[in-house]
Amino acid sequence: MGDTMNGEIASVFSSASSAKKHLILLVDDDEAILEYLKPALSTNALSCITAASVAEAVAVLRQNNDIAVIVLDWGLDRCGAEVLRVARETRPNMPVIAISGLPYEVRTDAILQKVDAFLHKPLSGEVLHSQVTQLLQRVSDIPTAFLPKRAEETLPLDDVKSIYIRHVVGLLDNNVSLAAKVLGIHRQTVSAALEPAGSRAVGAGSKRVSNSAEERFTVDGVNRSLQGTEPWQLQEPIGTRNR
Image 1 (cartoon, rainbow, N blue to C red):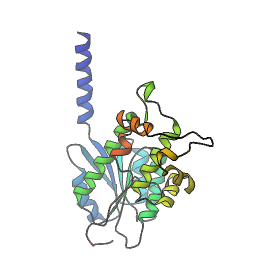
Image 2: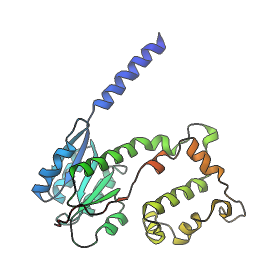
Image 3: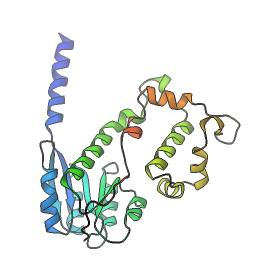
């Protein structure tokens, strides 16, 4: 009877959790963009509020703790990076998607500021909705993805670091220099992590890393968020209109 009651309680909490909508903050100084994209972020699972300036966005962030994802115009009046900074101060793990239709290259700047994704404007509501959904899934996967559930799943920190570095390099089109900047480490550290597993030295000693660490990392499901998400999904421009 106790197990049945516990199951019913868990079911109630699960239903309440799934029914709760994720609140998205859409920030853009173009009213037409806000009106066009807001419906894509107002669904059964999502609700959306908007801001049209840095000041408005910062005020919303400081007053509302329920925001799950920010969609941020990187060319906002002063600088989108200011909103990103406040977001990281208030909610460090909250995903931020930068969008821009500016004619010059802003993607690298946004990535170096460590946004979670970048999309070129104009973009479709479907693409934005898909990216938001992916990032929400990534956040929900983080606890089980990075923390071992059993003692035998524990991996040496150097093994995990190498796997993560190689994954980030792949996300950044194998750009070693950019990966080093994004990760805040030396370029040689990135290059060392890219060496074949059988020949890569760990630390200053002569210990070698075998393939078993990566195999165990995958089999136990510890790397689901590393393999199944795209924290810096670099999309190509959609359409030709710039702003």
